[in-house]
Image 1: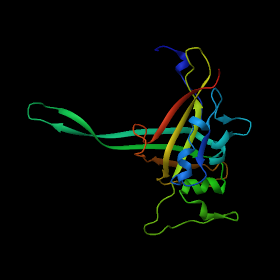
Image 2: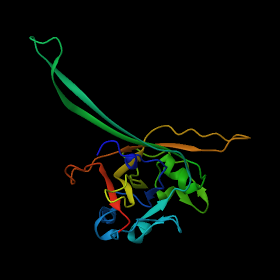
Image 3: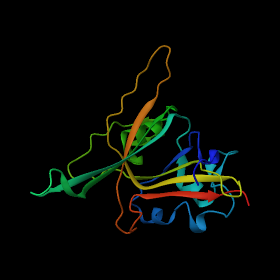
Image 4: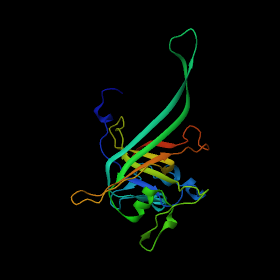
Length: 213
């Protein structure tokens, strides 16, 4: 419905990343829907600042973030030109790129590991190795969940919006500064990769949930 102020959403979202590589078979079933969630109940517990139930076991809160969450949906279209027209006669999608960017502000080694896109094995005994990688080594993929506000329902009941990405990789340069009078933030840009097993929702989902019966 147009001209509804309750359709305007404002506010940042808590951000969670899977604790292990999302290519592990066990993570395919830890989704923010179905048996992993309770009807009319938020999947985010503000008291513990963690996800509820099985989600809380599989995902870790990255803590404070800066500048919210920026999602970029970037299709590339090819064109067909014909003699009889001065412009393109038809467009077709020829490639696709979905990105998600934010800034971590908590400088834990676990967060630095995720910004650098490294596997959990590089972190041990309070030391993070700066991994070079090896020829043929596969990058570490993670699943991502963000829980934000959603437009209110027709009955003016409270809802939440869950952003879920099946496969994310940290793919761009991350530059952070140790400064005298400014906080150190860790910018990270995740590339979303599709999973062909989920037709029509290959990258993930955006789910609006009623959390007030």
